[in-house]
Image (cartoon, rainbow, N blue to C red; front, side, top):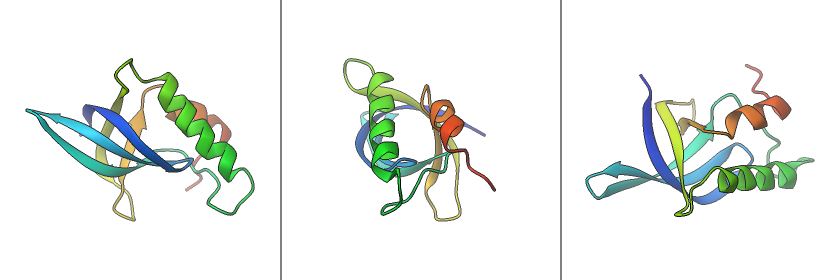
Length: 102
């Protein structure tokens, strides 16, 4: 089951992980660490780490409204307990460059 929320970026951890504030409605929000579903970018210390992280930050910015909100879909956690998320206009672009290979 997938849920849709509006969210704001707190910070990009790397090119496939972001700390976000999710609007739950009723004046409530939750801060979560989300991992982009289907994306596997270079880790810290690896070539293209900075490029991937900057690209994620830019794509989120481009797909956010004037108040800084973007649409995020989630419904399950990954093996490290992070929520697997899909951000409109972001996952497809990054997955075309750095796909997750199971």
